[in-house]
Structure formats: C-alpha cells, structure tokens
Image 1 (spheres, rainbow, N blue to C red):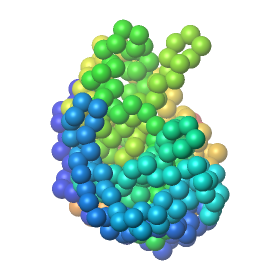
Image 2 (cartoon, one colour):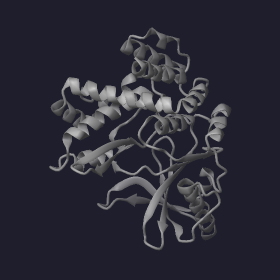
Image 3 (cartoon, rainbow, N blue to C red):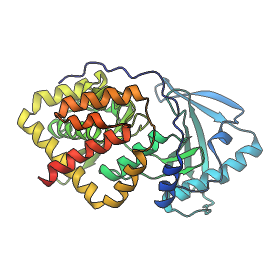
Image 4 (tube, rainbow, N blue to C red):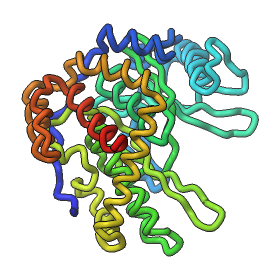
Amino acid sequence: MEGTGNVISKKKDLIPVSVGLRKYLRSYNRAKKLPTTYQHLLDYDFAAPLLDKTGKDTLWETVTYTEEKSKQLDLALTSIYMMLKTEGEGTRLKHLTVNRIDYCTFGNSNPFRVRIINTLNDNYDYFYVKQADASRIYGLELEHILSPNRINYYVDRDTLIEEHIAGIPGDQFINSYLGQKQMNKVRIAKEFVKFNERCFVRLLGDMRSYNYVVDITPDFDDIQYRIKAIDFDQQSYEGRKNLYRPQFFIENNKLVQLGMKLLTSETVEQYQNEERSLIARRMKVARHQMKDLIDVMVLDETSPTEKTNELKAQLAKHYGEKSFLKCKTMGEVVKKSLRLVLRGYLK
C-alpha cells in the first residue's frame, strides 16, 4: 500500500533510564565510565551553520570551544572512539584527533556528531554523543539482537555514545540513486519489504527516509542492498500501528511504488515470512539476553498509557489476537508481538 502521510505526535520527552535497565546494561557490557559527558559538550563558545557540498544548510551546527577545553575534549573523545572500536578503555592513539564537532538542533536527542581523523592518512570516522533515553536504548538493543546489523554503544549516567552507522541516507538514495540504470530495483524492493517487516515486528517507529541508510554491497554477479535504521527514538512509543510500518510514510512512496510494480502479493508474503523466520532464529540464539531485556522492558513506563491502549487495541484487531488487550505497558506489547513471530516459526 502506498504511503499516506503519518504524523508523529509532538516531540517526545526524554525517558529516564530505570534501575533495571542500568543493571541490564552493566550485565551486557553496555555501561562504561566515560571521560566526558553530553553536558560537557554543551559548554561550547561558538556555533556556525554546517553547509553541505552544494551550499545547502544541513540543519547541523559546527561548534567550537576554548583552547583549553578543546585539548581536554580531544583527549576524552579520541579515548571514547577507541573504546567503541577496540574496547580499549583508557587507550588513545596519538595519530587520532578530533577534526570537528557538530551539534544538531532538531529532533529528540539533540546529538553531537564527533568527527575523528587519522592524521597519518586523513581517513576519518564519526560517532555520536547523545542524551541517554530509555526508548532509544531499547531500540538500539533490539536492533542489535533482532536485525542483521550489529550496534556498538555505551551508556554512562545521562550520556549515550553511539557508533556511526555507515550508508547512504535514505532520502538521498531515493532522490539520487534509485533512478540509476545499474540499480537492481527488484532487490531494492525486496529489501524494503523485509525492512518494513522488521520494524513492524519489533515496533520501531518513524522510519521516514531520513531515519535510515542504505548500504550497497557489490556481489560477485550483482549488487546487494540493506536498509539500516539509524534513529531509535520512536521505539514502541506511538499509539498508531501504521507509524511502525515504513510503507505508510509519504517520504518512502517511491520505494512502495517500486514494490507494487515489481513484486506480486505472493512474493511479498514470501519475503515477510523469510524475515520473520530470521528474527525468530536470532531470538532463539540470543534467548537468554532477550529474556533479560524483555523482563526489564515490560516493567518500564516508556510511553503514555493512552498510547499503549491505542496500540494494543489496533494490534489485537490486526492479528486477531485479543491477548494484546491484556498488555499494560509497551514492553508487554513488544513481548507479545515477538511471541507471535516465535510461535509462527515453531509451527
């Protein structure tokens, strides 16, 4: 079905990280003592708009600090980068330095993007410093366990560090790459169907085109595509079920239309079943970790009661499963959704 223009509710408030979630993070090596914090980065002296190569405003600002503060941040941020890449806590390579720090003024998490450069060969990489938010952390962890994409992140008190997820921004891919002759459009359409199913099953919302990237990998006889979520703020937060289905966002209409043109309903159902089976297998492999995560999640209040009630009613009707109506939290709704996938796989 073609996207119809879903509307996300007003900006979501940050959801505190509960005691139970912090215990989970420590158990699975996600909690680290960091040498700097999100609040420290807010103490910048000057900010200037960051423009792209065409001179268009990116809606990010490049921030600068005093000389003394810059030296402190260079040491701290390069150490954090090494923690992300090698888990080498406290280690730092002298040829790595902070090249630029950008600040995003829109969105829920108002992140800082840190650009690290290798002075020996000018190669660079990014990572993000954000405010810790329970919804986002649950989203990151579910992505790591249930998707084909591995995620590196650390939490320290109210600071969240995320590794950069490489790929072509979805909106850029749709506008600049989708029409190219060498694109294998059937494979793109297939991947969008599978991505749509992943998001709906684990209830990751707001996957408009600028909230995911497309990874293009040359294969021995063609090209493979993988869509990766990069924004996890709307993990099981909204009440409308179609907000968890990327196909219903107008920003994704070209991908939806591509699928309608190239795929039959039988093929779409096949790809959906394939993705559900893959999710079920990942759950079985990580069953102990999944249980620990869900046990914490069902006790957390990560969404207003009215949104939880709205979503569980819509999913009960969608699946023909009245047991959704017994859910009291969004964590219980996610647990029920995943159980349906596992039940189908075991059958």
